[in-house]
Length: 120
Image 1: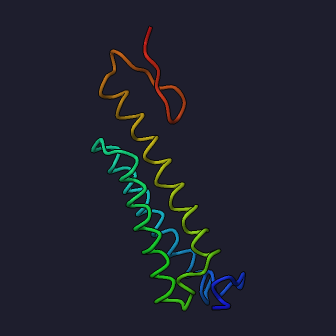
Image 2: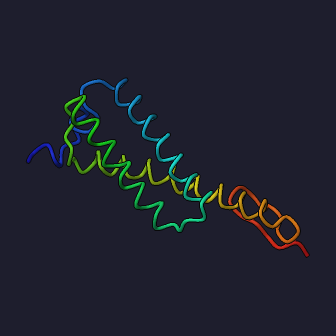
């Protein structure tokens, strides 16, 4: 129970920082691909959140099984959630804007990285 609220590096990341970085990059790729797929198939933001939760659980599971990290460590879960949600949501918003502009080029033009505006 003490390790759940521990700021101990091994409780959050596991025993090896290199393994943590590799697993995190792999799961960030999963979050990226899920956000991209949801945008390309015109899904809603709720599905992006749902799949980002699955990626967070997978991230914590891999750290727990491979590197003896604590699965329910509050700080580790918060860190995983922030990173994976950010990657999935930003990818979703960027690809949805691209899809809208490509789908309706006579009506919309790209504005910034995540937006579009009507052509006047």
